[in-house]
Each structure stands twice: as structure tokens, then as C-alpha cells.
Length: 253
Image (cartoon, rainbow, N blue to C red):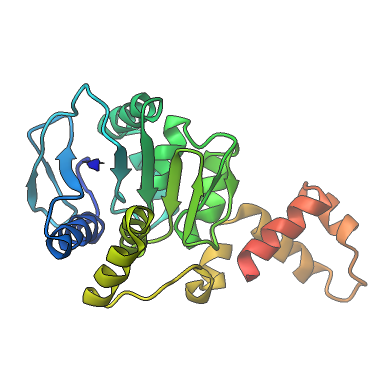
């Protein structure tokens, strides 16, 4: 399986190394190169978030079997939105879009925003970093977001959740080829099956980024002495009842 890991400056160190180490472990345990991994960018090297130089090769014209975009090292909504406007990130999104017509594409954590910007997630289900769900919906409204999930695969696209979900993503891709090998890799790397991000969610961190939920919270505080009516609350915050319920549920679950 030919895999390209497409990167840009400020790539999340742990995300990149998790992908490379997991596939390398699979190859070593298999006794052969089942996963041929190359790190690519438009330059000769990129700098990780911690300043390490990573040699890269130009993206080949021949499509691989899979392209993976690891996370950009942004934890806050404002920084990821700003990063998406960088010329190198726009070029990365264009690269993903060009390959998506010919092979599978994948991303984890904030790398899912690059897939969203490329357009390959439009009309599809996806996941992302649990605390960035509201920001993702604002940036990529065409996507059916399921941020509680650790892995979401649909058609030729696979997305994974926050940070160490890079490990879950790599393991899932290995499992598709060989469940036995994936099980052995998981044992060597001490990885457990983690189907959901829900146990890790800190609701207050999600709520801080959702303007609709913040408006709802302010409205509730002003009307604590009155009987609650969902329809009235939805009108007050400028949303449908269904949308308000869904956004509140995303914060609480």
C-alpha cells in the first residue's frame, strides 16, 4: 500500500510521528513493507511545531493508494481558522482535492479542516477534534459532523478525532488490510480499541466556542424565573428548534 503523508509547516509533531511509527511497526512485525510511506510537501522540508526539520519529497504525479493529512498544531478556533488562509495550507488543500479524485484521503485532528477546505468532505459524514466541532460546522457547513466518533469512514474518505486519534487512524487503516496484524501492532504499542471521543469531552470547552450555545445560555440566565419553552428559546437565539437541540446535545454528550 502506497501512502503519502502530506504536510506543511507547523505540523503537529505527535500526529506525524504517530502515523510514521505505527506503519513502521506494522512493516517490522509483518516482516515486509506492506505500507510504503512517504512524507510529501511542496518544499524540500517542513518545520514541525517544535521546530524540527522534516525532509520531504515532492508529491508524485502518480496517485498513491492513500493520502493522509496530519494535524496542524492549532488548539484554538482562531488559530486554526487563521491557518487555513495560509498559502501553504491552501496549496495542501488543493493537493488533497486533486488526489481525492484518484485515491482515498484521510486526516486526523485539525487535519480534517484541510480536508474540509478542499471540498472532499462536502455531503459526507466526518469527525474532527471534539472541542472544535462548532468551529468545524461554521467553516464547513456542508459536512455532516459526528465529532463524538473517533473514526468516520465514508466513500473514499476517512477522518479521525483529536490528537492521539492519529494512532487510531493508522491502526484502522492497517486493520482494513490485516486484522491480525493490526491486533499485533496494538499490543506492541499498547493501544486499546477506542470507538468514541465522548469519554474525553470537556463540555465547557466546547460551549465556549459555540456562539449559538452562548446566546442560549445568556437567554436562559435572563429568563430563569419563567417556564421554559424550546420554541421561544429557539426564536430568541435565531435558530430552529432542531438546530438548537442538536447544538446543545453536541455540547452535553
